Length: 434
Image 1: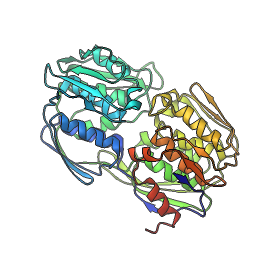
Image 2: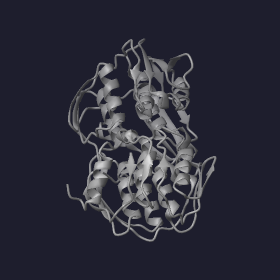
Image 3: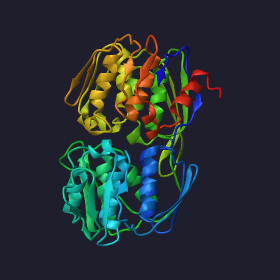
């Protein structure tokens, strides 16, 4: 696919797809809840479709009409055939927690996924679940793997790497466990599981961990049952980040994203964008389970920044496009504590270094981050997306600032999170006109 430089400012007001992280959880929690859960704002991306497909295979009634769905809760009934999680790590990890405690007793669920998902680590979920009493057939480090439903007990878990997927899976299992399930980990990861639990009637305790600066403990008491209720999925701030980064990059631009999540665990990108010199305005617009609002970005004089390890959990999806801005900013940018990016849909540290290097930027790949020199004059190039939606979208943003056209080997992975991205970007090129 050909990627063209910007031929003028980007302007307009847009909406982005619903937040994947919230959508996965809303669907899964609706499947576990008493009664009916009505969900609005669901995105059309492939990852959320994987969660829907697996839930239906488990016997859950999911009736979808566009961006709305009606989910009837009940027991998960694993089929004999494998459950295909596609490319979605969130689907696989959260469902491991759900199936361990909520599947029909004695029934075995077999989870699988595409080649990319088969490479991603699952032991960080299956190990703690085994401590709760979950039973796995054979090795449980990577897909494909099998989990058998049965009784669980509450356990205190210490998770050294902040991960919303791991914490979410353990808390979901905790709903079915006898006693208290507590997850201790570094502060900063997304809190969508806890917010939706509270909205659906299950109390969640969250507190700083005494004697462990920068750590927190989150706990639920089981057994407990969620209650079905209407849930609204806000716009995805990780999808919005690519459009907002493009606005910060292209002179004269002004891009406004409406109805986007302003959850404090998801606004780290906006803080870094401000620190880099972009002009950022965020206006709250409402709050249900998740706070939402409007974000407007205009260019400023971009400068390099240090992104330390403690900031990474709130930026894990946005770091690739921040690296693009860093490549053209004045002065160096240093990213550390981001080794988690090596086990995403691709090795994102290597993929971003490859992308920026092809465009003419100076970048050094570190074991847990990147050193980006800044001040690059990007040039059009043949680019690789590495089968990763975040890398593909970052390449499209970078191409806006390049001299000459670029070409990417495969743009199809963009559909995982933002199927309409290229159409929305074209509309912003036309000043927001259809």
